[in-house]
Image 1 (tube, rainbow, N blue to C red):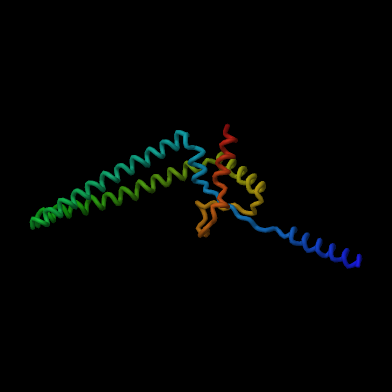
Image 2 (cartoon, helix red, strand yellow; image 1 turned 45 degrees about the vertical axis):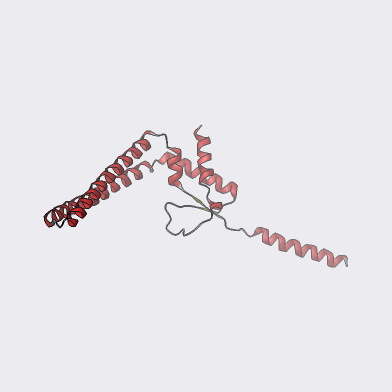
Length: 175
């Protein structure tokens, strides 16, 4: 009887140790753009970028309002059966819409290039990588993905988002 009990205990121990040796793959995600913008919120170059982005948006809004006003004038002219004014407003609307589209494309590309330049700060990304590595090792993650640069992430649980933890780590490192 003792022999069977000892064998049972050994067998159970082997099974449990086999399960313990199997590593469960754990994934985490981090939003590096949010980390960057939080970490460098007070940096002059980030403030300049945000100001430029706001100025461009203001200009786009102004042009959109002008187009809306012209559309209202065109509608009023249509109501009065004034074909000459309708054509005039239609031409102005088309020109302004085309200009707005070109302006928005050029300025959005300009902002994208500026943002890329801002986010290519090697010292920051070295610190970021170190903190992500530490967090992953401490929390037992096998892999950490950047939600900004991965088209393959279709869904993730907020429980695997370590962005706030990384921001906290970098903030404490900054002080």
